[in-house]
Amino acid sequence: MNDLILTAAKIVKESISTIALTGAGISVESGIPDFRSAGGLWTRYNPSEYAHIDGFRHNPRKIWRMIFELRDMTKNAQPNPAHIALAQLEKMGLLKAVITQNIDNLHQRAGNIKVVEFHGNSERLQCIYCGAEYPADEFMIDDEPPHCKNCGEILKPSVIFFGEMIPQMALMESQNLASDAKVVLVIGTSAVVYPASSIPHIAKANGAYIIEFNVEKTVISPTITDIFIQGKVGETLPEFIEAIMTL
Ligand code: NAD
Image (cartoon, rainbow, N blue to C red; front, side, top):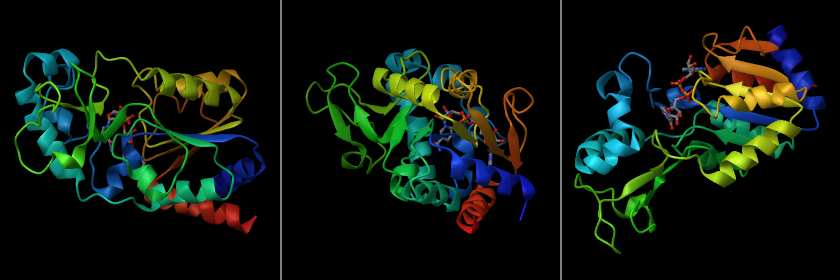
């Protein structure tokens, strides 16, 4: 067993408050590419246009072309061993919450109960004009943008576009969790998208231990990370759970 994983396992086993911050990397092994890597969505769609709320307001039909592509990419995705490992950690009473930047609902489907959806959830749709909300599966059957049953406008996935505010509850809850955390597991995130990227910094400033799981080092690895566990999280997280169970 990897010594770093064993050390991390001991720290988490003894911690009274551990949280996880997850990003697109945890879902890569479920077949959902992160957006920045080669072939990712942002290499084909300019995010400042396609992921900005002004772009959606200006031409929602155009943005829906990308959303349909995203839907086709994610519709058959299943939780992978990394998601399952975090659900196990919560069941063992060793994980207080997952704060996720992902919008794919895979933590919830893996069985995590306490999930803070920092950037929303693509399984819901909302009307940015009258505020109505709908489950996405009601509408996502053909390739025609869905319309609000209330006011007729084109609906938007309930995910945070650039230029939109983070849901107030998710922001406050995450900041409180970060302030109280003794350990933060930073998993599969480049840790650059603000304000989610501030979570490990808030925790560190309050004395938390930072354990990072990623295939490559990130901006926080040389600064606030205490233990860096390199590798695919579909492999390292199950090993980490196994290590906890041997203690
Ligand atoms: P990011 O694309 O900026 O970074 C992904 C990180 O994951 C990178 O550091 C990469 O090295 C790492 N990684 C990739 N594969 C990995 C693996 N198998 N094991 C371990 N690490 C791996 O992602 P981000 O930091 O989450 O920020 C991107 C934004 O895009 C987020 O706000 C998120 O909402 C959104 N997004 C969501 C999804 C999703 O819901 N699954 C997918 C793509 C993007």
